[in-house]
Image: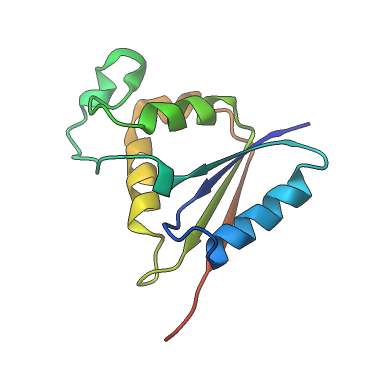
Length: 124
């Protein structure tokens, strides 16, 4: 049984990305331990590129925000799933802030074996 962490990058609860992530989680729960974190429910400040994380205790970001919760979840995960709407050919700003915080050397401690992307696009 793998530990699956799903990071949902949409701020729209019940939107297409949220529904896709929930469906993926339901299927995965049959054989895996699944945790979902919606970035809309956490506060992650943008990375400043200061590199202070390299010298900080545990290599964690020196900004105090909810990234510590995500680091802890990543440390337990075997599989990481990133779910996001596609905005201007990229992931949402909220999810991008989380990804940027993985600039820390702490990322080398994560034992992820697989990565999946769930991306939702629409044209108006």
